[in-house]
Amino acid sequence: MSADTVDYGLLDRQLAALLDSRDWLTNSAQTCAFIMQALPHLNWVGFYLQRTPEMLALGPFQGKPACHPIPFSKGVCGAAARKQVTQRIDDVHSVADHIACDSASRAELVVPIVNDGQLWGVLDIDSPLEARFSHEDQTGIEALIETFKRQTDLPLWKP
Ligand code: SME
Image 1: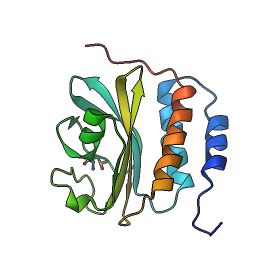
Image 2: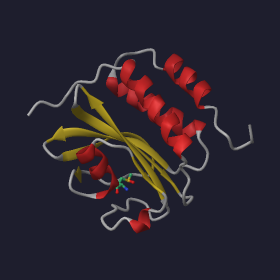
Image 3: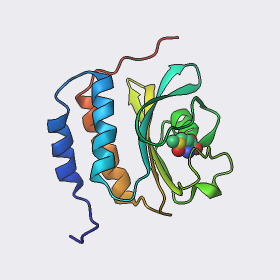
Image 4: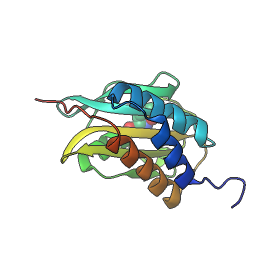
């Protein structure tokens, strides 16, 4: 294992032990702080939550103050929310409707959090390094989100 290789299995066990509440606010705050500390070369980690129709509201995060709100129709987070599919972007400058909260960000990974087919929110991770997120990072971070979901009561927004 090289110095920069992340042991996602170990991180998953550590996150599972850290999340000792079922409260979504506590667990989402802990999860983004944990990821920010555990992974190198990140400049922002946080949650956007569905609170109104077709709109994401800024939730717990680590990093600089960020954009709020984000419509489903726009940006990388909007695409993840709309399609309910992880978005892994090597260079956000290549995404025409990317929402630039911090000009330092280059790579982005956004994982949708879906509960019983309904979107609860997304986890958004930004890096200043181009192509920061590999396929292995994507599957490792998706596994962390599965652990977050399994150990958290996620109240769904009701129209
Ligand atoms: N870049 C995102 C917006 C959120 S910030 O990166 C924190 C997007 O295009 O959806």
